[in-house]
Length: 318
Image (cartoon, rainbow, N blue to C red; front, side, top):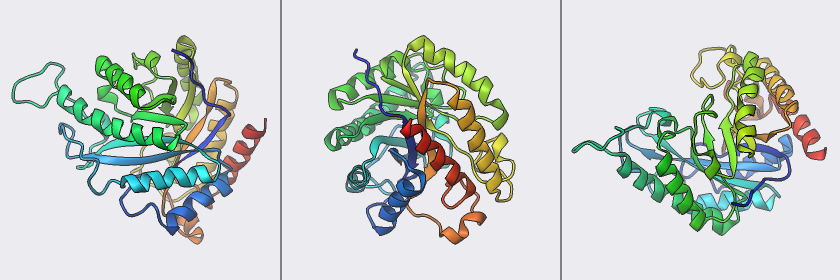
């Protein structure tokens, strides 16, 4: 297989989450995406949205139903990003309607009569992914992400390899899988994708240690690597548990700023980190006057915004 690489440096931001029908393809969404590029100097964006299965053992993924964005909204977002000169990774994600995190979607390893099966779930997931792979091909997306943080599915190597082969029949560009934090050295099928990516929600004091661990994986496979997700809420205490969006704390821009400075400094020393698709920039932004009271991941109007803009400007002009 020829090596498909992404160039130049990925100065990226995730846009549009969670992809709720009716929130894309309008003036507010357009303004949001324009501000994302202007204020952060991004050259890439992940167009990210979710489809819902009912519960972790459900084997149906009705991606054509609300609240998932429509195909027209997805195509609008891709074309809008491209009209601004951004490269696009399309990132369809499955979520669970009852609030269970998708990492817990799981089934018995062996088929048991009258119980839901991996084969049934992967058939639904395949239909979901191939649908958007075709849209990625049609719209010329520069990268396609086949899954995000599906920790319990990661061990199903054969099914993932079969899915990747089918995606390649539909989509001609490079493919990545966004594994969860701490899982980079547990995925056994990295050879089947073009680019390794993961969610880098590591505690502020753990970056060097975690990068050492990830570096061994990247060097073993000889593949390009970037962080498909990374970021932290602007909230007291979040720098120690950046993946916990429900953590109790008061709004704190300094926490977010310091986290980004630390993460960028650590990753800057590792030539194999090809960039970031930071988390995240919503399709409807809060008012700029409310930035200091906002304690979520978005950095619009917060101290971290200029840290990101300056870093991305430097990395893309090197």
